[in-house]
Amino acid sequence: MGFFENCDPDQRFTLSKFSWTPRGRFALVFDFDQRRAIKLYMTEDIRDEYFIFETMAKHLDGGAIRSDSVWIQVSSDGNELIDQGCQVEDDYTMIPCYWTVDQFPPDLPTVSRSDLVELDRLGLQVDRVAYEVIEGHKKEAAFKYLVYENNIGPFWEEINCVIGMHSRMIHPHIVSFDRLVTETVKGVEKVVGFTSDFIPGGTVDDSKTRLFKMKYLHQLIETIDYLNLELGVVHGDVLSWNLLIDAETDNLLLFDFNSAFPLGEKPEISDVDLVVVAMFDVITRSLGDVLDGESPYEVDGAQLLNADLWEKDPEVNLDADVSEFHRVLKEWVERRKAADEDPDSEEEAKNPIDWPELPDPPLVDCSGVMEPRDSEMRQRLIMAGQPYMTWQRPSSRELGLPENRGKVLLATGQFR
Image (cartoon, rainbow, N blue to C red; front, side, top):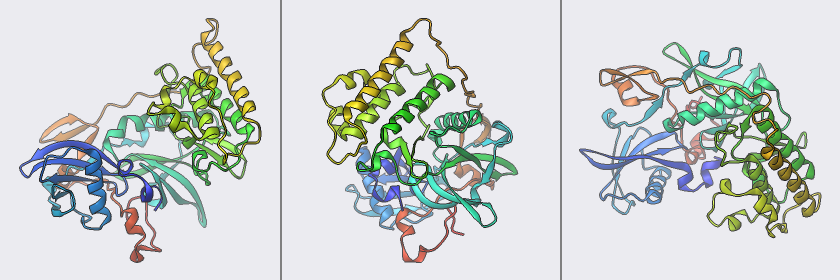
């Protein structure tokens, strides 16, 4: 179902840590498809991440690992599943300490996680969902959420950036914030994510043959100027996979602010340079060859513009000559660069959004001692008989099985 059916193992899994127990050394692996953590024990001390991820995918997708297992042991070649278990004391799943609704601006619309129906899996911690707005009328949305504890800081930055932009205006070329997604635990309403408008049709990166118009470039330039110079926001990832074309309005839209930061915080990353990189990718479809291992975030846009490499891919369709796209880009880059170097120009954005500091973590019971922690072990909550938030869901492979076809899967991971 969606992203996880065709992605590489290193796009689906992440390695949280290596450690050991009396059973032996293990790798703690998080699976973003099923949203679960599993300890992988091997008969040899192997630290090759790709091998570990391939081994996990093989046994998970083969249906050999039970849904309640928190550890497995495999042979040295990874082919044989030797043992598995679900003992609470072996459960190393971490649960983020979610923020309360009152830690966000008042009067923001909300929707309960249990009211969201999963329609598709778009990527790591983001799904396409639907919910009922009024009786008989459903809305589709993109649901971004926090389930992996190492993303707590970046997710706080992203959600507040999106809310901050929303508080200024609904921009015609930025995918709009929709609602906070909440869940009540121990009588307290917690924020677990947010929804934004869902724009069908895939990204610009997904289809090289779709006509790319000159007006889209002008819209992108205007949007980046608005973000940088008006709101003081650097998107930080303005590349073709974060650009959409709305078929209904025929407008370009920018989305995914999980790399955004305040203007001036990371001077080595420039949205202006990234727009050049994105357009080079759109036009030539040879970005990977040109980068040759270099990060797109390190490319100097002016240098790339001056390189004799702007040859249109035969399958790419444009409504103007490459030379015209190149001219518009070059004039804009020169204008922005001149403004940056002008000592009389404004150094700060005109109307910057607020970037609230990450709240101090709550006090969590750690073996009888209350300590500030931004996540807590599910093991401790189970042993203490306390309620906790669950996220685990069937794998994409399981959803295609005959016994699951036609069932409604909620964003909680449970079938309705």
